[in-house]
Length: 168
Figure 1 (cartoon, rainbow, N blue to C red):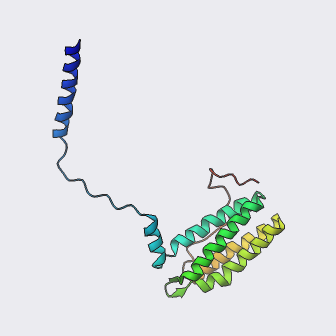
Figure 2 (figure 1 turned 45 degrees about the vertical axis):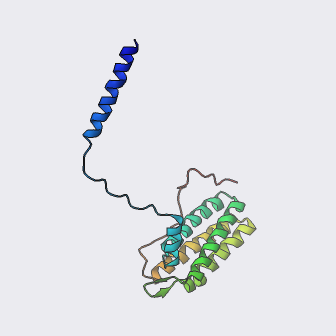
């Protein structure tokens, strides 16, 4: 029995060695480097506005879902995240096609976010709905002024975050 076992092991070793000889000889191209957090930070530092806009959109969607659910604590959290991101845009000195973005964010986005915050503090669902609509309008107005009107923000009509519960 041990001779049979040894024979099977030797046969498997030969098979593996044989397969190794028949591997294609073409070199495998280097994989592109992984983007790291440092790359992301560097992109933001060098004028990349898109990551901030993506964060604003994600936080606004979650804000809407929390407000619609009446989860005022969660809505307040996302309202604060929007404020922080807006402040980063204002302080970042971002420009799009020669248009300074910070003053537009101060003029349109922050007042709209403030009205949303007031509705959250009052736990007023109707006022929240109106203020959120104004927030969406402010986003689209800024996009239009900066020749990015092709980016149209809308009030969410479903939950794109199935892994998060927005109920209070």
